[in-house]
Length: 314
Ligand SMILES: Nc1ncnc2c1ncn2[C@@H]1O[C@H](COP(=O)(O)OP(=O)(O)OP(=O)(O)O)[C@@H](O)[C@H]1O
Image (cartoon, rainbow, N blue to C red; front, side):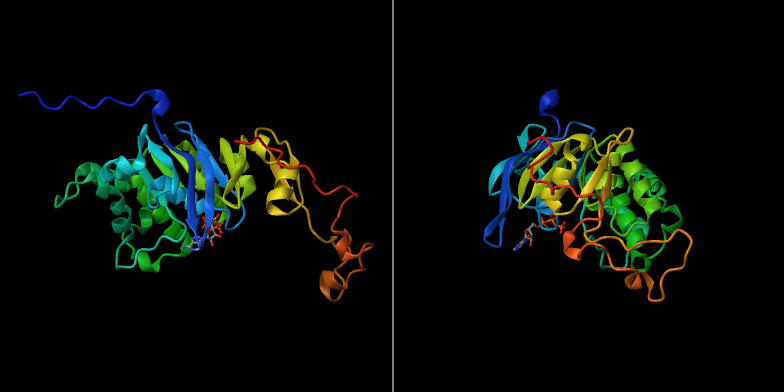
C-alpha cells in the first residue's frame, strides 16, 4: 500500500517565519501593537527600541510561547498555532534573556537539551545528536567547559551555553533576546560573527546600536509596542530617529559598510589639558563649564531633532 504522499515544500515566498500585524496585551494595554516582521530567509534582523518597548514580547510571539490577541504568526505559510509543536520546535530556536537551568546539569547536558525536538521519546542520543552538541560547543568556545557544572559558570559562559543549546537544535530560525548581555567585547563580536555566518534566519533584540549597525541586514525599531522604523541600518540609524526614540543626542558617521553611532553627552565635558594633571578633586573640580548644565550640549549649537523618523516606516 502506498504511504502518504510526501508533503510539498511551501513555495519560496511563503518560506520562513513572519509576524503579520500582531498585537499582545499585558497589564491592561497593548505592549505589542500591530507589528509586522517578515525576515528574508538567511538574513539577520535587529529588533531595537528602549526598555519596555515590546522587543521580548514580539520574540515570544514569534516563537509561539505567547499567542497574539490579533494578527498571526506564520511559519512556512501556516499559522504557527496550527503547526505541530514538534515541527515548530525543530525549526525555531530561542535564547531568552534570563535563561536558567536549575538542576545539576553539565554544560554538555544543557547544550544537549537542544536536541530534544530531534529525538524520539525514550531513545538514546544518536551519533548525529552527539556531533551537533560537539559542533555547538566548539562554535561557542565552550568545548573546554563541556563537563563543568552549569552552576559554576559565569554569566557570560551561561549565555554562551544557551546559545550553544540553540545551535545544537540546528534551527532554521533563531530568535535571540539581547544575546550579548554579559559578554565581554571579544565574545560580543565573536557571537555576532557566528550568528551572521550561520545559514539561518535570525531575529535579535539588542540595545547596542553599533553592534546592530555592524551585523544586521535590517532593523526594526519599536517604541511603545509599535513599529516606528524599519530598513537597513543606514536608513534607520539617523540622529533624528535616535533622538526621537531614545531621547539622546547622537552623531552618525556613514562609515564604510555600516553607520557608526557616536553618542553625545547631555552636559558639557569638563575641559581637559593635554599634558596637565587632573585638578585635585578630579574632573568635578575642573573649571566650571561656560554654559549652565541645562544647555544640554557639548558641541556647537544645533537644533534638537524635530523631524520624526529618519528611517522608513514599515
Ligand atoms: N505580565 C505582564 N504584566 C504587565 N506588564 C507586562 C507584562 N509582561 C510585559 N509587560 C510590559 O510590557 C512591556 C514590554 O515588555 P518587553 O519585555 O517586551 O519589553 P522589551 O522591549 O523587551 O524591554 P527590555 O529592553 O527592557 O528588555 C513592558 O512595559 C513590560 O513591563
